[in-house]
Image 1 (tube, protein in one colour):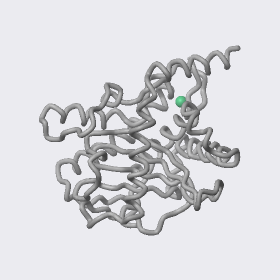
Image 2: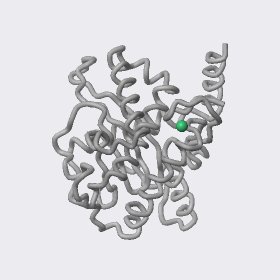
Image 3: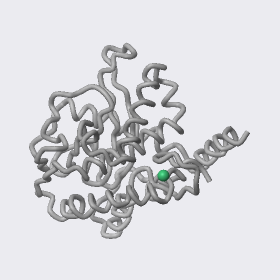
Length: 267
Ligand SMILES: [Zn+2]
């Protein structure tokens, strides 16, 4: 038993992946061909993906429906034809991207205490409110509101990036960007999700000027020239963070945090 993060019902929870399982399956099925090579040896958990009891069966089923839609309409066609133009003005695509961003940020909010210690009280209040807002929109399938969230879908084929952004990895990161080392400038905050062939960015606050061609809602092309300095900077910072910190949290640590949380609820 536990409370479902999406519908808040107290019920049996199923094991949910934070970054969808389909991407880890893709990495596994393609590792046999030797087509893609890792420059950094992944540990087992990276291969299997981060998962925990997070959602009830109903909510898990809802997310799975959007995931299947994304897989069939966008992901598999793209991995077979990397020159495809992505017609991204699609409510179900937006839902899928937000469902991933929400899961990642909700996970960080509950379990990444080290990251939260870095944030101010005001930032944490806004993050909590945003998470709750996103939760309600996802739960109600409120496509009109979901459309207001800015997200980017960046095909990684055809753009040159450092080797540590290999296409054989999946994971997530969250970071608050401030101006000039001050806190609470609310310059930029974005949920970063890396999967084979794509980077998804979902904006929590702020904006960036030079990323328009990857904005969800437009026709997105792969290999559409080099990425802007601004975007490269964002990717590199997140990717480093994602490799050095996120993947250090072991299954055991998550288990012990969850037990503590359970004790606090019961006791
Ligand atoms: Zn639920």
